[in-house]
Length: 547
Image 1 (cartoon, one colour):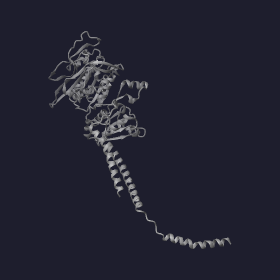
Image 2 (tube, rainbow, N blue to C red; image 1 turned 90 degrees about the horizontal axis):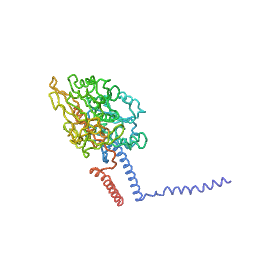
Image 3 (spheres, helix red, strand yellow; image 1 turned 90 degrees about the vertical axis):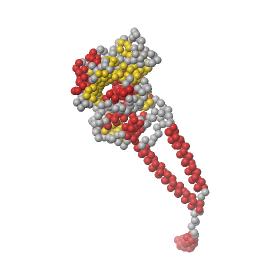
Image 4 (tube, rainbow, N blue to C red; image 1 turned 135 degrees about the horizontal axis):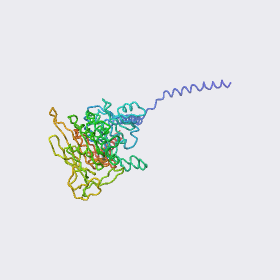
């Protein structure tokens, strides 16, 4: 009975439900107001504009990142231009005709995030690629790519370590140079000592200057040089140091490093155990032998320079106050018109003396020393700044035995001030300290003749009065001209040309100096761009309000 009643009620309600549904179908849909349409329209437009702007920003970001890596468009506002390379390097890089590879033996992300100074190296490396498409820069993780490292190691006598930068000729893998990142910097030796032995400082605390550009450019010049100068440094005699190792180990190392930085190929050799082969070496370095040379070794030096009558070779001889009597060596030099005196030049005028730090017996000592003046302008022609002083510590004077002769000529290169006096070697205090006049402390002797073709052929000996002329503290100090002058003179003697004498970057200054052109660029970024954005925003707002 209940079911019948339920069906009757549903049937009675059905017509009413159908009528309501019919009325709803006939009822017109409510139209959107003009304001809603306008809101929808501009909302969609704003969304579209936002999407376009985001897309443009993304594309610009990718584009700018690519351009920054490819072209030198970053601004370097540091006072010492930490992140820039010199015009000399730029000119050389632009003139490259051979393909060169720069390979960093470290993962790129680790290299970029491993301290401020590695970031600077990374920026400098990119600069080389930005000025020439002949240079390819890659980063290789040695642990993940041992084959690449082994390929380099096959042509390298040392041991490759993480952080090394390998510069190699793309066409000839045997022509390569390795620059270690740590060696791209100079260090405060006192701080470095306490850092190494006591941990009082961090490594970055010890850094005073950046020499990496000189290292990298020198390596680049070497691997692209078709005829590099090969140098044999006679550092040993029967397996022992030929020089006073206590006082001059750093001086010789600094001299070798400077030669390497200027594109010379260095090999240390033993005077008695190795051949002084003129076919292998173009130049020899004899660093202040403590004891006299044997007659056989003197003959080897003479034969090297004579080169079977073909000449074309050079010898650099360092004298020093630590040497004993050397009659055989003295006679050899005399045959070339040079005589190194058994005295030392001491500055009598305290006001004229230059106080310098010197590495002696493992310590840094202060000493007042004479300054040298340039005599022969030909050998200093490549100096960037001739006004910088040239300290001449403990130099033995050099007498020129003949001004000129048919087969050769001697020339004074550097002289002391006229206020120096001469003290005999082995004597602590001189009895007579009256000035002895200007003394020659660096000279060159040249033997020459014409060959069968009428071409002038020649060999040279360059004599330097003291190993301390290349002292590590003096050579690293940008306030002095010793490193630059020595390289200018050696490049002139060897005919290597001007080379590239690139100043190191002083990293002890932390201020930022902005040039006028850079200031204009900063002003545009800080004021002009925000102003343009504001103007555009106001225009858009007014246009929307008036619609």
